[in-house]
Length: 109
Image 1 (tube, rainbow, N blue to C red):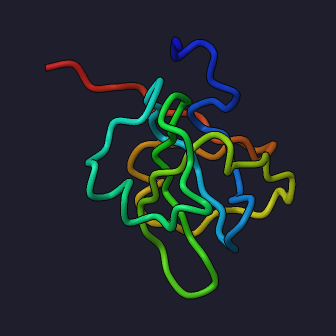
Image 2 (image 1 turned 120 degrees about the horizontal axis):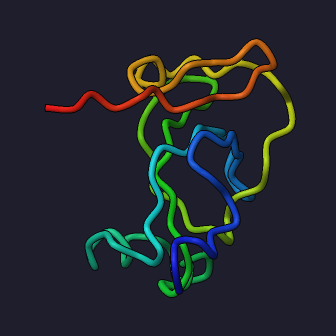
């Protein structure tokens, strides 16, 4: 599976299908690229397949902000247009006047 087959894009706001959190995608793995220990820590009845894109999110729920690693099957587009409050977003993204997030240009060495 190639990254171009990913359903979601960097800078897109998504929400989790099962759990109450949302976030901004900042990176995509074409397929699972985390530890076996992490994968096995997910209860078997909700454990995602490894052969699909996984997304790195600047995530947040009602209580806190954090980084999440989520399979494509567990994400849905978030159409709320509510701004995200995760402070890490400002380091890598600009929020446009229309509410969309755009990656900041990279600094060359």
